Length: 527
Image 1 (cartoon, rainbow, N blue to C red):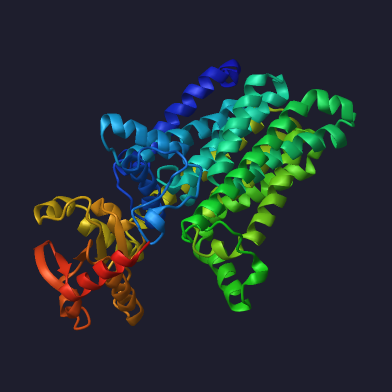
Image 2: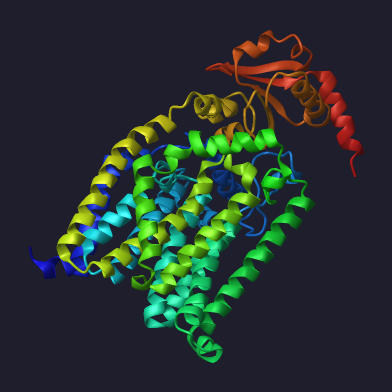
């Protein structure tokens, strides 16, 4: 065996990139990259695309964000920091709309994150087969793989998190301002997308603090000299995230938007029955999607090794991993209710697995400085990783075909090619629409590229919503029915006026004159 070849970092990086491309092809990423929104959390994927289109329709005003749904004033609403949406909207203004572009950009960022993590490991473990094995076994999560090639902002935040971790590692060893700046930019951007990702920035910064004072017994003066700039950057990042969070709350309050979650959902505010339900989801329904069960045992061994061989670990990494777990525990407590239905919350939790597994492998690498032992460890991890990806591939395909997801995507798919049909029926692009039935706030409206309002079902409550919208908006809006069966509803008949057209089970109506007159009268009385 050529020892120097297996130690060469450039060779290791090339091998890693080649294997990553092969894994992407095995997981059908080249096919999924051309998927429109779909699968688990399809609704939130469409929300992201709404932000891009809203920018293009409203003059590219950076702080004025929104969606097609007019339940809020002018559709206004804010959530994650919209710089990525803004840049893509600017690109589309020049080159035309490309619905896949957000997915491609996020995939590129997660890929850079994986490369960065591999390099962080290989900087400290001069045996690239082991660095490759560790990176791939950590990536082998159904949730991480599924969202790594997706439209959700968590995808981007996750990639930035790993890039920031690499930058922190380089700063620890080199103290170069370049890595300080990169770490600040990507960690802060990740937290501006998802404020809870501040936990990762805080864990790394806290690790530097504890390493200096507990492990190295350094003085406060030497700490300021060595890490003062990093801490100042971290503090600035916290301030920027707090300011953005404040903007979100004020903006949504001003425009009457309560759609996005901007508050905690702590464990002490849920009922005992719901608490048991959340624990059941986390420990059974989602558990295999976090990681395959055998891989959890591997991580358990690595984490235990990192704790036992504490003196052989890199203290900064050790403290970072400990703080990461403490942070994730706090995260679980404060956002407990969300863990039932939001599997992508694990994207943040994975940081604790990445850092603690890295710490454990590094401790074993230093404790047992024998290439044969390192080779056996690498082959063991690769074996588990291969087994994981075989399971992951099937689970990813399953996620795009779950009956519940098909239920939500059905209206989107039906309306997706109806934009031209509306134009043909004489419904101008400026005319708002009321979509009945749609199962989500923005999906059907985005498919039509029209502003308006969804009606979510045919219950008495939803007919009351339709009545309210008809009384206030029917003089300007048209009614889009997403299924022929709706025409059999006797409650619907009084709302129907002139039929403008029908195609592929989608029907378009003007509202009955009675409602149009009421709406016009109401509109004339508005200030």
